[in-house]
Image (cartoon, rainbow, N blue to C red):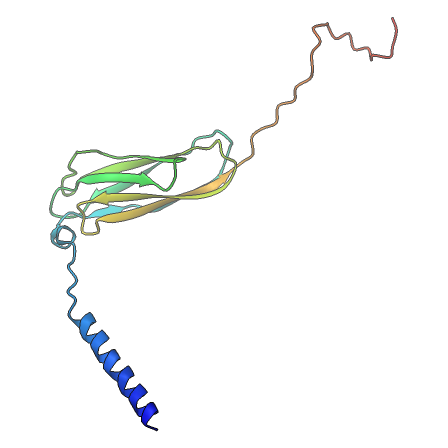
Length: 162
């Protein structure tokens, strides 16, 4: 009986100490994010290309507007892989009320389904924003080639004699 009481007491004391340690932690929010008055609002944050031809146009422009009260500065835009390349207004403040675009290009020489993201970092109230492209790239067209032997094709089969 004494062992049970001792074990329960030890567990209670350990729990109290662990909770006391967690209560002493102070989380510091990102001051730039919480005090920023810039705000980036996209018309859409997902674009579905549907079905695209192999080596077809895999570019889409995501339109956004600064609906905040301070200039918006985009510091980075990074694709989820090397096949997704974003182009964004670098070092150009977007004034309150102004609009701009982030162009995203997907390498359509990769057949099959795809869903890729671009992470945008800015001085907006939400410092990181993720936009998405998706679709299906058709397989590469098959080119029919025939071996050539340098002779003119007269239509005769190899077994026919002239």
